Image (cartoon, rainbow, N blue to C red):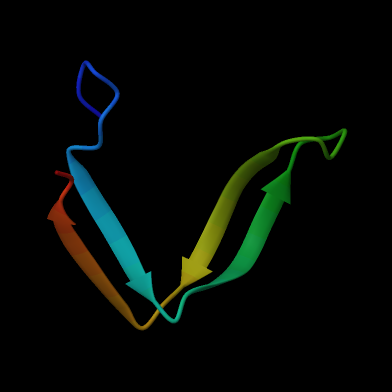
Length: 46
């Protein structure tokens, strides 16, 4: 993100799904996720 909180790049996943997630001890926050996908494209955020 830039100083105006606008994205500078956008990542798009094709056929993505979560394979693993780690929750906080009280299960109120997702600390991390692992994602499997069949393709990734990166484009300019504008």
